[in-house]
Length: 535
Image 1 (cartoon, rainbow, N blue to C red):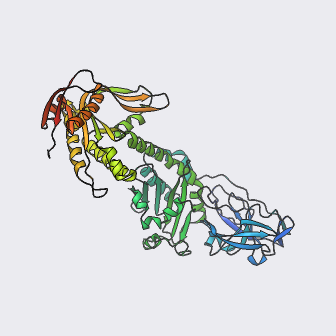
Image 2: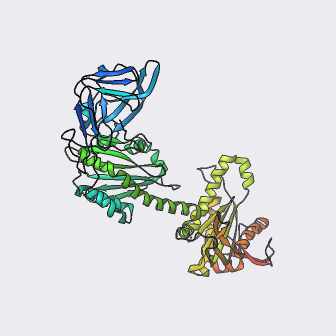
């Protein structure tokens, strides 16, 4: 049986003194032995191979695999260059289609060319995939799988009993590195790349080095993933589902030809491994290990890491789930609101009655913009409108609650006082108007205009909706007045209209508009038009 090291499979290798040696609990290795007498492989009544020089490979937790010299294979082998897999102990497996009579078995055989040291005994030999040979006859003794022991040891005990207590992924990465070194594994550097669900950050990359025992944390952007340095890296290779990588600098330096290998060589690295860390949702994250020991990683030590990789993956997945939940809630609800939902405000009716300044900002002439620019260019301008508005609101201690078509609803809680909430809301509005008027050369060079209404009052800040579909928003008279003041500003040609209370508390120049009647608002509202610095 041939099991390949991919996102779903991990090799478990042991070193055995004899075929029938008793495994101890931490044996992970490989043993290849010649088979006595003639060995024949058959598919029905068709002879696939006949050899007196066949060999058997024993791998921990795998069925024994029979390898035949290529000259002793009687079936036609047609190279299948589109298929290859990689084993961290034997190297790259090349595949062939097997033709038997009128039957073609795709990728039915594999062989290692230029095998790694652990696989040199089968270099150039051919093995058949499970199911290709219906039977294998031996003149010598039958082949039995070796007994398999349990996995124990200091590293395993630590992963099961103590690793869960790490409070951050950085802490877990450092503790893992120290534990591997303590357990006799010659690792000088560990990196963990975990993909994220974030609109700007592609993932988190944690790098631990043994000599200074520190962890550096990076947040690669999506633009970084398009750079040649990443596209030609082992991280990309593994993340793309192409399997793991092992590059012994002195044994197979040209196996993958990654540019980073020369940098590692100059740092004294002798052995490098990149392996998949699959999460339960199917995403393939990456763990890399580098050794500066003259002989690199031993088979047993490297096998131990592979054996534990699934557990290591689950430990990091816990942090990733929390991080992704936080990122998604902040992205779709806002930082303050997202924190409340993550903190348990998830039932319909959960929320608080608070005093706050409410800002409603509506993009003007959006229908005309879409007609003139076309849908794609218009969406780009709409995104610029949202980004400018959100950045300014956040910078003034407010929070965007939602985008409503081509409008923005933002809140400025009065926890810091009535005057400060009104001042921040009006200052945000004034800056939004100025910033949108500046043509953006990165898009269409268009100057945008908006209508903003601001009101202050008591609102309910929390969950409303159906039992299965909730919306975290603000409900109250002030929110309705803010939206209607924005509409009124369009009618009278004013970009910012606020209630008289908000305008006076903010202290910025404004023009009294008197008491105005607003649609769907009971009673007139005293309003002011706030003037911007370029008016």
